[in-house]
Length: 151
Image 1 (cartoon, rainbow, N blue to C red):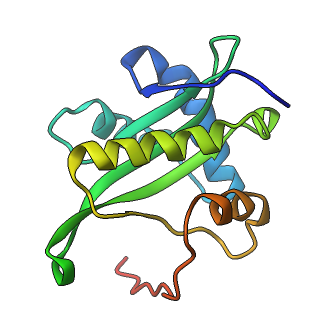
Image 2 (image 1 turned 90 degrees about the vertical axis):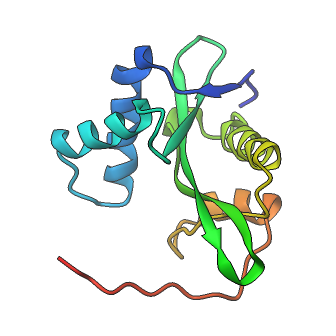
């Protein structure tokens, strides 16, 4: 599938399409996501003071086909700031369109403009299709991820 994909920051008018994409992302990872949860994330994205930002991929037909949520994070050991990609999702119908590559390239440009030292993210080990893109676009690290559940 070859399509023209445009990347831009999310806008208030994107809410309905963003909700569909974000619900699809949650379903992909089997996360029970409520409307209240989506409302919270949307409020962060619309708040210019909040650290979480979003880019969206727009297909040739003008519809949103992908999203990327990101934020800065401190890197004390290197005394730098990096960018963390929290969520990346492309509508299954638009996979293969180049949207994931375009979102990653746009995020890298944001990072360069902000002086970040790295863009970092995690993905599920069995997310093979996405990992094929990530292996082309980034370097896989040796680091393992651990969580301490607090609630």
